[in-house]
Amino acid sequence: MKFFEYNWQVRDEWFDWCNQLTIKELLKNRIGGVGNILFTLFHIIDVEYSWIRGIQGKEDVVFQFDDYNTLEKVKALSDKLRKEIAEYLRNIDDLKEQSVSVPWDEKKYAVNDIIHHIIAHEIHHIGQLSVWSRELGLQPPSSSFVGRDLKFVHFS
Image (cartoon, rainbow, N blue to C red; front, top):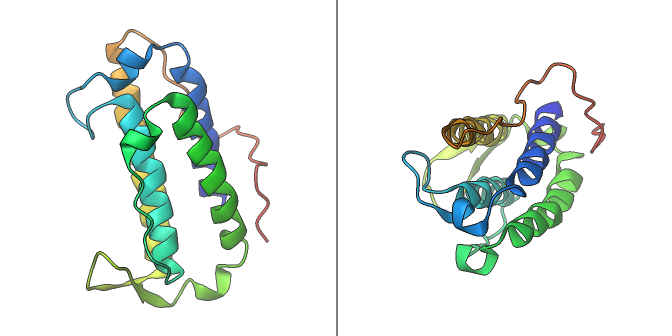
């Protein structure tokens, strides 16, 4: 589960990066992606949590962006949900080959495929954030996997 750790570390670096922007810049509509910087971070968190709950057979929790429309609120949501997700992922190895269905889709998916989708989804949106960062004339956080000290969560 190193890639979850990687995504979470990069996400935290993006939260730090966002501190240099005004709320107006964070909410400014941009070309591509899901619209703006803050909503992109919110979207990443929301999708990750929805898929994990889907794997667990739990009802989806729908978060409203209007309730998390500041950097501090989105970061707090990320931190809160990450703890729950990390705990669940510690014990997921036995489930990876199982197929599950999720409330928003009639198809069945392999748990392992969902896990890979969650990871790829965040990496995709981090790329969009990097483009917007450069459009603002700012250096984005590094997305390199190599050389990172991944120690947030130790999975068995």
